[in-house]
Image 1 (tube, rainbow, N blue to C red):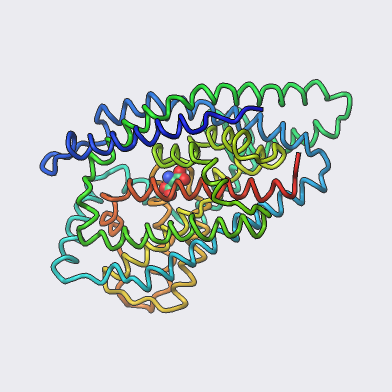
Image 2 (tube, rainbow, N blue to C red):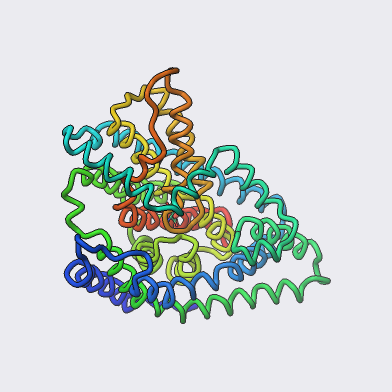
Length: 434
Ligand code: ASP
């Protein structure tokens, strides 16, 4: 066992971010001609970091879940781990989303001057309609559709199709079955068990090499983000909304999750664990994708964070697709903010609807950039349907209002998503030690 890439890597990543942000603000940002998604800095970041990481995700999910599950073996122990993991995921997401709903109700970021409100609405509508891929993605969203989709992904008919489409849920389910069968096979299947555990170790070694690309990738991605948005957005009227999201994520990530880790994980030093997980958290921030970060999360959780293989091999892949504390919290804040901005009063019942649907919508969001922004329309639809008949509803184009600043918030919520997964793996290490 080694200690992982450690402080050197962390220092390089942080440096990459700071220099990238400075370059983005002072070298790339131009309010009159903003850079777009096909700017070369974004393309370079994709090439250097996102694509190599994504390449590892599906093989890693397959090998890690098969190796982890066959190591646990006993279906009863597996059931206990699975049940506790799901309870942890839903429990923490509900806490996050409730915190978000409470904060946005308290801060009231949508209570702005008439002029500011009108300006935000006008620019939001233009931004939404100008972004044809977003309006297309949004139009197909519904609660029923999302859940049918999840269920279909969980019962795939062709594992190769799932793998080639990069859909991890079906791969996890298949790997779960295969792992149990390999454990049940005893001596007969020992060679296959060894193959999967050795393959997993090899993939982790590959990850330790790819991880060194993180500082460079993050440099380009952060430069691009700041170059498109500009730091001054933080002090514009929409800054209050961003403030509510930041505060919520900070409370959840820095107070609630460490508390849960202490309480359920029996870890007396939760912040030490946070420190150990830094490479993964910074990669999440830089790449904006918990799925692409999964290789780094697994490597760091096992080698630096002291999570057991039995726990992390199973908890982290599942978590990267369904456990999204940051996204759940963000969806609640964003939806309530938009209703406030449009002057539509929400009752307590409406807030309860927000809490439930935002949790489900966060589960349905994939671990990729701006997935939460798209599944948010499910929450908007649910609240609209519960408003008194004939009253004003929130148009879907309203998400154009928050579109421009979404990337920065996405980076922060992705970090909390990954941190929530890591805390889950540490807590479950108690249930499934190696
Ligand atoms: N980008 C987030 C993630 O990968 C999902 C989202 O909230 O958009 O975890």
